[in-house]
Length: 159
Image (cartoon, rainbow, N blue to C red; front, side):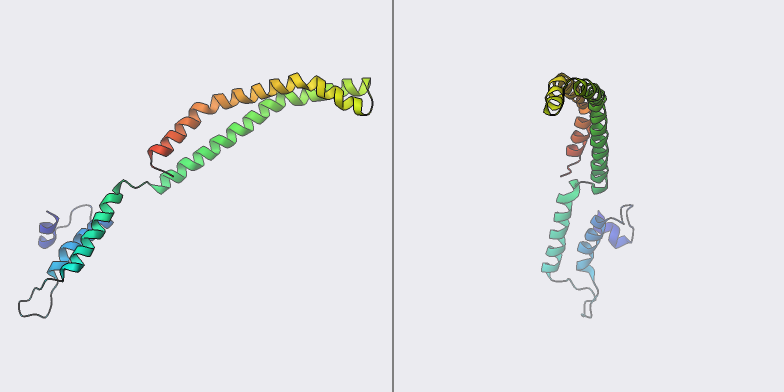
């Protein structure tokens, strides 16, 4: 069909694509004018075979990924991860930092020197565990969105 359209001078709507240009080159290779007596002479078969081979390579790559969309998905994933990390750290610090100030005040009033550090370590153990739980809760909240972005990334064929 494309050969007939080319010979009639009609171009289909997809004429700007690389695929169309290769089809056009492959069809017109056999119809170039030369100075022979017949007026039309066919190019050697090797040139047509080379053009058709490049056409086949292009067709097999038609399922190629869209790099712009892949980059957009990567940027979205990076923003999501940054937001998740920021919120997780903030939720952990919201528990640990006030508890640290209270523990410092109590321990420095009761002990001196190395005793203050030991006291703070003992008092902070439960708060640190609570802070880790708060951090994990934020990460679990973001998990469905992260999974959806990763699934989109893989579905697009991005690497």
